[in-house]
Image (cartoon, rainbow, N blue to C red; front, top):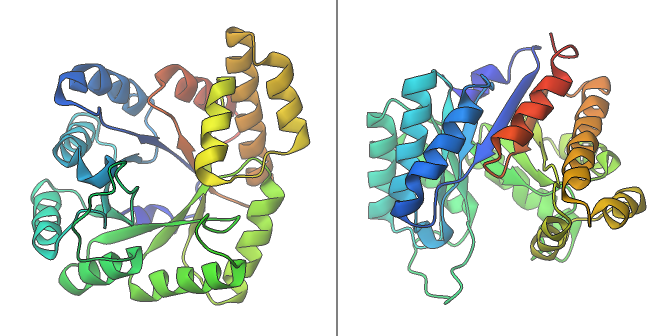
Length: 286
């Protein structure tokens, strides 16, 4: 199923992101975790791509397993970094041969050693390449607080419009912890003429260290309210997990109450966290 078709309706969708192991010998544990999440019957699941395409085969393998065994639509990621035109052609072919109708086109993380060989400087170039060769549903990323490498929000939103014009069917945001940031971003996106679905991405922070790493990588603003929660409960793992799930659930409820019908959750391959969120929402999204 094309995810863009799922997002056209008024029904609420809750989806989860999972990631492949860094090495093949970790596949069994990751497969088990992703299957437990798929068993929760999310609307769809995305499967990320390792830095520089290091886990590309595992990404597709996990995505195929989810779709075939659980009948959950999937969207594997594909990145510009270390991707030649030949490799991109092959990726499109493999995805379609697997019966997958969606592909998330991203720039991707630069490998730590800085070594890259690619034909696509930016995500928009990859999106355009895919669209010229396929009618596959294309997802793309967006950044409510602006991309960390973009000096001005006005430039960032203009580049985002270029992605949509190039062929992106829907957008998924980077995580944020203040819903007002998302609402403001949504207004600016619509004002510039971006009309495709924009799905907010929510990350449950269940360990204090997780927040520090996430903020360092993304530059995401942390509201004082949430920072106080982490400071107070961060030393108690059980309490931190519970309040992290509660905070994420509260964000989702607020989004739903303000007319947002589609939510994407960065599950970090944690079935218990995904299950807790689905249970919290069970009587709300019926």
